[in-house]
Structure formats: C-alpha cells, structure tokens
Amino acid sequence: MLDFTYPDITLIAGVDEVGRGPLCGDVVTAAVILDPNKPIKGLTDSKKLTEKKREQLFDIIKQDALAWNIARASVDEIDKLNILHATMLAMQRAVSGLSIKPNFVLVDGNRCPDFGIQSQAVIKGDLLVAEISAASILAKVTRDREMVELDKLYPQYGLAKHKGYPTKAHLAAIEQHGINHLYRKSFAPVKNLALF
Image (cartoon, rainbow, N blue to C red; front, side, top):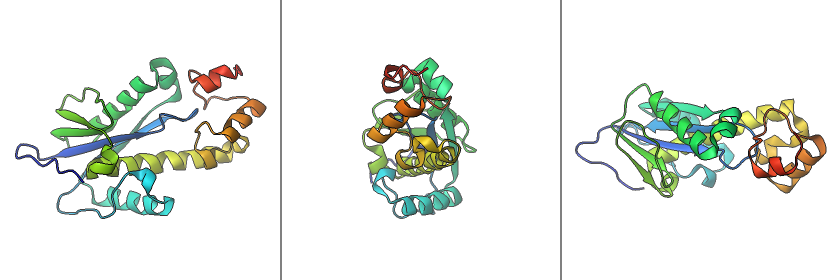
C-alpha cells in the first residue's frame, strides 16, 4: 500500500466507483476515511476479493472507519450527462455526504472532480491505497446487492449473475425481452439494439 501521510494532511478520504461499464443500473460511489488507530487487514481492490471476503470487509469498514458514505448517479443522470460526468457527480456526492470533512481526497483512476478540497487521482488506487480499497469494497458490495434485488424483480435478464455488464447472455436477454427503465439508453449496445 502507498503511504499518503503528510504532516499537513490529517483526514484522507478514499473514493472509488463501481458500475461505469454495465448497461443498466446506477453508478455507485463510496468515500471512506479510515481510522489510523483501527487498521483493517485484507484491504485491496474489491475485484480481487471473493464475494464472501468483500461482504466481511464491508461490515468491518462501516464499523471501524472514521467516516463513510455511499452515493450514486441514476440511470437518467447517466443518460443526460454521460457516464464520465455522472460518475464525477456521484463521487462529489460521496465526499460531500461524509460526516467528517476530509482535507485531502484520493480518487481511483486518472482524474478527479472538483471536491473543493485538495485531491489527487491514483492509477490502480484501489490496489495501492487502503482508503480507496475500502471505498471500492463499499461501492461494489452495495451495487452487487442492488443487482441481486433487481434480479428478483426482472429475472429474465440474469442481473444477479452478470451484474448488468454486457455479457453474451445479457445481450441475448435484452434482444429477447427488450429493455425497461433500468437500462442506460445512451449506451451503444442498448442503443444499437434499437429496442426503445
């Protein structure tokens, strides 16, 4: 893990998103300020963890972090703003909703929105920075759970399995059943099927 401890930085928030690539559902973001007195073992990129381990860490992060917040941008916002701008908006919401105001924000990826706070983008940050790893876990578990719940309402799409990503099975299901309000109409695979 990278160490971003500087004398003038006391509260670092890590930020990550989940759900930029799927064809449906919200893009979910999280912001986490970890407690230096309660280090959490096993933090890494959420995609490298088993579902069971993610679920365990999800509860530990919520319990032991100094502050955490989960935010989102809706399907309508994604279609109106585009996925990049909707993700940036969701990240801003995640940070502004923290119960403690950080004085530095680290974001996974190569760009940061304007948080009104000093910030830095970190490539592969979810692997390298504990705060971002924690945020990636909160965001992924939240979105995956939502896809499982939506699967119960719309079982014909197989959302619990592919979580909305454009797999062969998902595209075949869209072709067979059409789309509903969950789908991002601005996304090429949905648009190209011309089903709305």
